[in-house]
Image 1 (cartoon, rainbow, N blue to C red):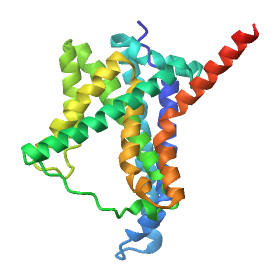
Image 2 (image 1 turned 180 degrees about the vertical axis):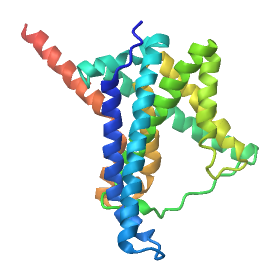
Image 3 (image 1 turned 60 degrees about the vertical axis):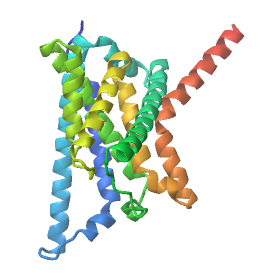
Image 4 (image 1 turned 45 degrees about the vertical axis):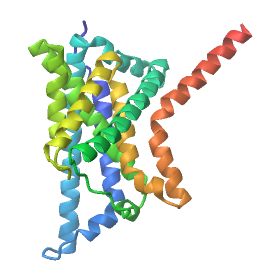
Length: 285
């Protein structure tokens, strides 16, 4: 099994996220202006903001570079089928394998969102779990390009978290602790309780909920591949963060929200186009 460290794909992911975070920071300038505190000079405020943004973006890029490269190396040894798609993507970005990953990703996202809704419905009705209602007011409309925010949140969280907790985490635990159930449970629980700062009562419920979701994502990682999990994670975040756009009566906001949610289907579209081309070539022959 090839467990060598392949940096090219990791570099592409790291640089892409670095550029995306910088773009979203520029997109959020109206909100940054609102956060200005008058104890320091206006020019100093922007200098500090720029320095912090660049350093944070670089650090995030380095982190993704590490988990992507080391995670792929580990997974090549432990779960080669789950990362074989990355070699396919190096040859052809939107091939048949990626199209199937997109399909399975949307399926996983639908199961996750539906399961979450049912879980909260049952828990609030029978176990007094409380979750505050969202306000229709959203700061996303104060940005230059509102659609860029859900796109950034979706991609950054999906790539960094799936590479950390599925690609690296599951492979690492499986290699050193041997048991598959531990390899699924430990990264899922760490990922889940790291998100338990959401306003849910009782406070442990969010961790339990996402641990179940993490186990499901782990199963899809082993059963299918890492890109299935990345696409599913992106779709879930894109849907949740795009809700203000999708609720809007403004056609620009509504359409841009639908495009962001549907971007994960791009591999399916290219896959269908490729299949149609092959079919026409066979008919000509």
